[in-house]
Picture (cartoon, rainbow, N blue to C red):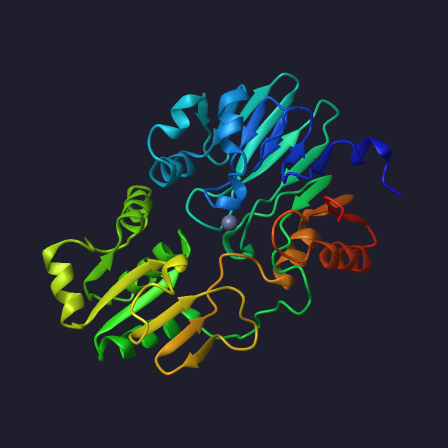
Length: 338
Ligand SMILES: [Zn+2]
């Protein structure tokens, strides 16, 4: 049994807000908390942000996430409220509680949030994370993402995905344009992998992808030289099916050149690192979330007394809670209840 005092210190609301301690609401609006944290700039973690900006005392986020929101929602969006940026590893005091951000290996700017209350209890929200480069934080209460929270979601390929990606892209470049589809953040990770592997084909991008990539570059990622779609040179490359890369958001996959060489970057792949879905059309299993084993590993090392799995966002929160209870004998619950 978990002490009543612990279960009252954290929850996930029906509207997706992750509440930590007395003052913090992460990733969705909640009228009872004065501080709104944005763990990262994916849409399902910016729920009700407009309302939070209007009514919360403060929006807390990392500098990189703020820059990403500025390009995704426009520079005026955050100006309606008071935004305080906090670096990972830094702590602020609010009333009797302490709030600290830690890096989360996910998209640029992603952070985990630790609240330490007046009784010294450590309440942690991981946000989205990939275990690889994410520091595991010891906590009494652990609120965690559950995207791949089912034992069926394991990526034990044991292969070097980066070199697979590079060779796939090189194969495509021999034929002409290679279209790459992915979500914001992941696309830029692909750019960096290709850049680091010395793939020097010109890259063509739509405006939004360009802006997000420039923020990533400003914060230290290497994305190579990018050309906007409407530049003359870019138009010529595409028109002539010249050897080049074209990066698009996943949402554009049904709108853009159906018969060209296409690669989708998606984490929802567990059987093989690369899958050919049709001629010249591939899915590569490059994920920015932990698989099931990574989620379990986090719990093992964080040693919490209570785990809450995020059942608002897409994933397997109930299964994960059951598996955690089974393995560690600690209380684990998926919230909100469905
Ligand atoms: Zn995310």
